[in-house]
Length: 170
Ligand SMILES: NC(=O)c1ccc[n+]([C@@H]2O[C@H](COP(=O)([O-])OP(=O)(O)OC[C@H]3O[C@@H](n4cnc5c(N)ncnc54)[C@H](OP(=O)(O)O)[C@@H]3O)[C@@H](O)[C@H]2O)c1
Image (tube, rainbow, N blue to C red; front, side, top):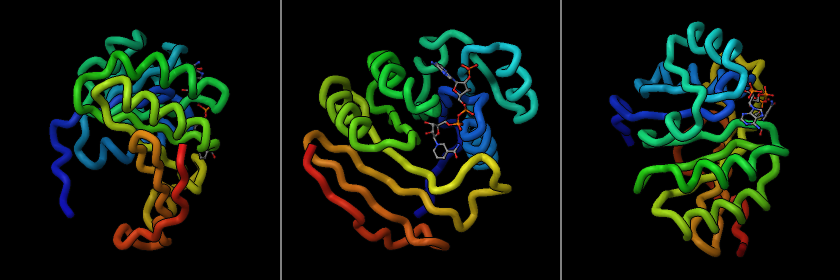
């Protein structure tokens, strides 16, 4: 399947961090308009210049025009950030996280997708910021539909034929 990524706006919350940079680089390479958000402006500017992408220090301005928002803040701030960002997002946009705990986050995203007109997805990359590129690396996806979450495990080396890994009721 080919996805037209040209002109799509993606905002990475926590974009100056290790994982934010990995995904920022990836999305930039694949034609998205990338905006990074974080609190420390000096770090943020430095990373944005390195990746040749935009940055924004005001949360609302950073997400209001985004087609996709990725949450990449530390685990302990993820729930709070999802609750702040979801009501600011435009209709039919996509909100996803990559945090390393999944059950409470999937539960929260399910509530957000019911409460606001947005789509939600939860990912778990099975790699850290030290990678040179994402080729052949594994990401677990959890599709959030209100009350049910299905997680897919993408077998190494392929983006086709995901295998159902776990289905659980929220
Ligand atoms: N590292 C890994 O190996 C790995 C693997 C899989 C998944 N993950 C997940 O990826 C996420 C990010 O991890 P990381 O290793 O990239 O962390 P990190 O390097 O510490 O980066 C965290 C980012 O979030 C920002 N931030 C921190 N607290 C914030 C807050 N309260 N509000 C807004 N921004 C905040 C930081 O910038 P400011 O402090 O300037 O705001 C920074 O840009 C985590 O949820 C983690 O579980 C990590």
